[in-house]
Length: 293
Image (tube, rainbow, N blue to C red; front, side, top):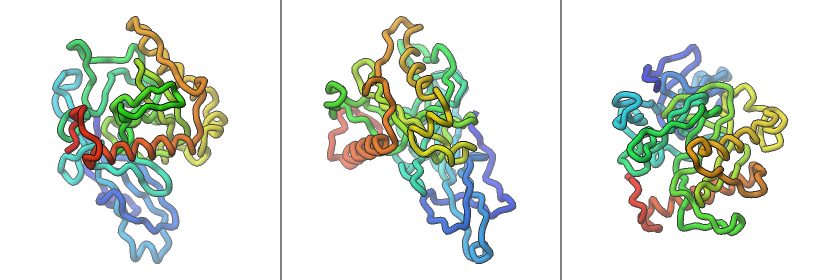
């Protein structure tokens, strides 16, 4: 379940405040604990005397009973509900991105940010009047990038003209720990798969939590293949086949089933961020009736 413990002071100086504060540290280490993104410092004496660290104080707050249609997980900042889609910045510091985790690894309920509800809480997906579960556990942390949107009016000529699936961009986090539903984590984008699901383009960004033990060893797709041999193919196969037990056809992937590199990944993220901005600013009509406030 979501963590609700208050932010606590560590032996190093820690505080929870604005998410984009500039940090001037000799070295910094981040992690998510007690509902907060903490910055744990190893500081020079001058820095210790002059700098109070500020980090994002996002907390996940569940409401309702798990396994019901009413259950939701809201994201809060300083006790106020915020939208994980609109109010959390896409970019973090040092080339990292913020990701909101919807589904912890090794679990099966199909959870997603409700793009059509105010403040966009996380809920369990439904179909034909029933709560949806994957037929087997997902083996990675799964979530979305804030302030991105796969526009169903934008077609991709390299992939036969398929268009976006009307959702934020998905992230598959390959680290060793199960992360929290509703948690906001800084991740390093590494690669991307072009999944085509029922005729819609549904990008899957492969990333790693910045505090994973292997994070410093991976920076691009070839590093993932070296440090996590066979993992990208496992991800592709999982998403290819997960609908088959329900009698549906397998999903397909563009680019000959091959993952694309980090530069390509960042290009997709930037394009979908631009599409999101046009939607949010009213430059693109909200014909899908998404909750943008």
